[in-house]
Image (tube, rainbow, N blue to C red; front, side, top):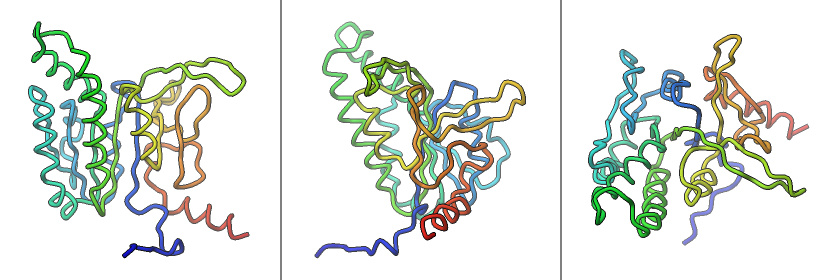
Length: 237
């Protein structure tokens, strides 16, 4: 029997999925301080020291010498995570991707270089683990990554360099397609304040399907409830 849910009963902001990307050192990990409820951080690049003393935050560190096995072990605890936490942060996919390929290179014929099959294996493996993460019920999920630039061609044939999360192109579209929000975090050079771009253009990949904001401070990033009410009021006019 089909599990039919009325659209009027669907919450726009419940169990959101967000991807934030930025240069190293911009403050991606520190956004955990702005979340309400209990948060679990899966620390993939061992940068969680910035959360020292933060109440309501627990940390699990990836074994970077055996990244694939460590990630698999983490996913075995999906039910426990769902039952005990309000938020899950997967912090930093770019670092995990690099560690994964380093491990595969160690197992190659020359013990250094990656082999052709590693790249297709990564595509399949990454799709499986991200699907498993996003299927964890009753929890908000934040994924972070470093930033890179990719070439895109606009509808008028112009070629641009666009900022985007630093993961291989073969998996990037799937990752971003599953997210409700994708934002690029930046630091204002004049004030030192941190903000997140939420509306995309030819120069920046970003999207926001939870509310109408085009940009926000990091402190207000997760404040979807008030901004969603404004969207719904506009739609009802």
